[in-house]
Amino acid sequence: QLQLQESGPGLVKPSETLSLTCTVSGGSISSSSYYWGWIRQPPGKGLEWIGSIYYSGSTYYNPSLKSRVTISVDTSKNQFSLKLSSVTAADTAVYYCARLRDMTTGDYWGQGTLVTVSS
Amino acid sequence: QSALTQPRSVSGSPGQSVTISCTGTSSDVGGYNYVSWYQQHPGKAPKLMIYDVSKRPSGVPDRFSGSKSGNTASLTISGLQAEDEADYYCCSYAGSYTPVVFGGGTKLTVL
Image (cartoon, rainbow over all chains, first blue to last red; front, top):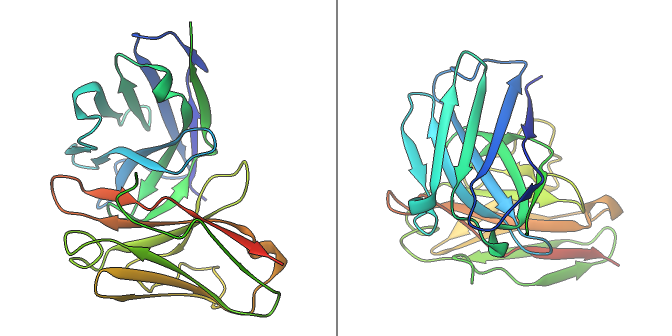
């Protein structure tokens, strides 16, 4: 059974960079034809797609966040990561990682991790 | 404001059927057969209920069905059960510039 687990700081200061890692167990992140994505949810609000990375390394980002987002994969550790720079309070959210059969079909999700942006 | 429009809330009694709509444009819902639906209980991660407009993942009850007409996708839940009370989100592919868009979510209340 595939499992995903997010990890990283729960508190980030404004203007700094938010960094999260998603560790995949029970399967290889190098498996062909899957995307690996990040989705966030501000408290009490809806889901927002941040971006995805294809198993080949191609990346796709939400245009509204593109200038601040980097998603990368470390196949040796079976992990993929999110970096979001110049954060503000508006970036406070639960951040989820997910495996995606295609760009919209997230069949396995992590439990989510709350990241608060505050000084 | 979300790219896809969903009703804020819907409700139904146990055993009844409810339909949640998801309205987009010809650039997203209407242009591709890549619409997914997610169920989210409070404090939990989203769960995939429907993908590719009308396909059900293994383990999802056949009470859940999806369809699409023009720029509007729909999720229908028949034989409502108490455990169906949750938030539901639609998601669509929207092309190479903005590949993924979500709806604002619909709160389903089972009366």
